[in-house]
Image 1 (spheres, rainbow, N blue to C red):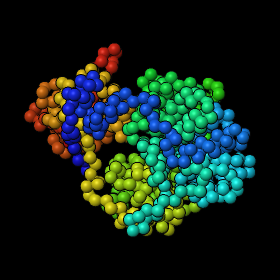
Image 2 (cartoon, rainbow, N blue to C red; image 1 turned 180 degrees about the vertical axis):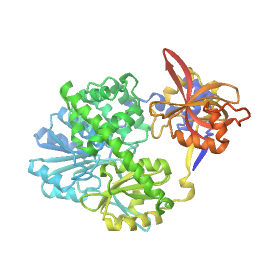
Image 3 (cartoon, rainbow, N blue to C red; image 1 turned 90 degrees about the vertical axis):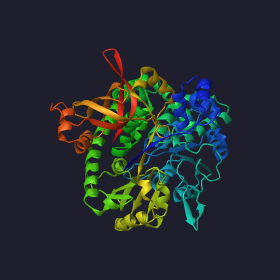
Image 4 (cartoon, rainbow, N blue to C red; image 1 turned 90 degrees about the horizontal axis):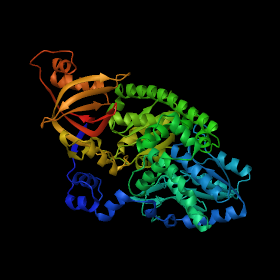
Length: 590
């Protein structure tokens, strides 16, 4: 169920327009993103890396810097232990590059998703100890690895944790008791006692803050690490962090760097996926480059993506990038089959009535559970957990909606789980198979979800007549980029739109191109890339078969009811044979 909400946030748009040399419309769009006051607006429009906070403000950063600077000077063997997703891979690369730049004797290990599971485990600790490792540095994991870090300490190793996930806690009578791992330093902005002003960093950003802090203390040239911001940008977008505050600066700066990157692996991946390096956007990270890197950790080993980032020759980089692209194609096929199985199960069982969907797919590759959960969430707009058979019991991943904190929901059912971790929008868990149904019942009983929570809010920035969709306006929208979670593309709407004609295009018949006009009489091309069959069925149900066929040019009968609808849309420019014309991209309809 969609609830269209027109944002009406007030401000002195004329003042903002004159102060920052932008149009009042752009000023209104910035206000809709809760950017208030001249300082905040200036930071949003013109923020630079000089405005990033000092990483030493993070709790335990001083301890971590002290430990690592001494270990580097003493020539001790360091091991970076990351994670198998994009954030974990980029975090590992940042720490390896940064610490080696400072002269560290450092190597890395990344857990195998199938064999090891998420984060630190006893096998990784044992392997490090037997390899003569003095100090373990975690990235994008470690905050929940109390037992494993205790084991490493028992063996005499030093452990530095860098993470960005929620700190485990137990809640009694409304009071929370937090449990930090017994490491020598725990750097995580989510710590309750950490007063770092921006809490929304990804694991790679925390890793970047650490290596730059160590470099500063050791008297090294910190600017020599600037190029690692492109890796922070990749991780920030791929890990679905809000593109606000420091993340906006990291991604904006990182995208510029990525377009001219000197990293042979990233250049090869950009080439082989057909991305135009001169027009790189957050979209390309989230939907093209990121999934290729993620595929290595899902279907093979994340170490392959790390090898691509460390490639020394063009030939090696091209080979590894090609492998990642091929893996991602396989992942897409497997995902489509698993999503179909999930939808069939939901529609044909009592699960359909639950507020939190718990789907058991024994045939699903466990690495795909999170993607499948995300696709199912898109269809039903409910929190979704997808579980599948693992070596021991069941393993799964969840994806949430804005109104429900997934990690806290799991914490209320922690007594049923073997292991879990994550944050508000995503989480992972393992559970004994015989507890599956009890978990499904209890996660729903304790969800606290009400009917209003399950109504997807479509936030509309403003009504915009088609006469305002000009190339100049589309170009001006670029000042709001990068777009993504926390800073969505502006969404416009118009009512009483007459659909004059329509036709289905594309080799896979996956584009609906319409010629439409608004109440002011302005005609424009409109493209829809969503569920075309669903839209046509909707029109058929509202206006009848004859009107639908007339719209599609199959029926010329006079007297048919006109198809008049409301659309939300994003303005765009179509370029064909050197001719540029405005068009709109339909997002929602009714």
